[in-house]
Length: 84
Image (cartoon, rainbow, N blue to C red; front, side, top):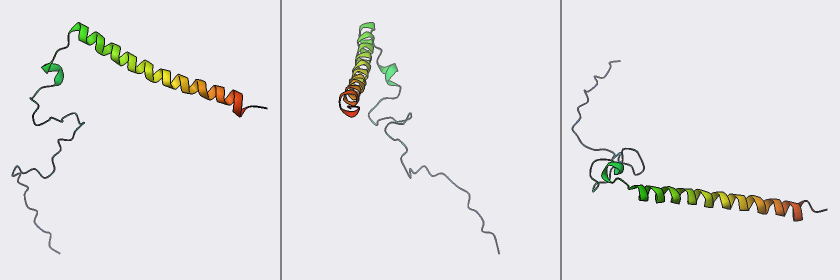
């Protein structure tokens, strides 16, 4: 059996599959200028404070929902489930 000669690969620049996937670190929108968003806009101290307050408020809201669910489970278990 003869081995087939392998053709040398030559890149012609065509795009077979676009790897610009939304959510990936290298993703850039076609209309977005080069550079990260942090470089494009710097937040003032007041804006940064309110940004952090929003993040803390969202985290506290989620924690409150979990705490309420846990409390309701304990009440359900005490009053209905473990009732003798």
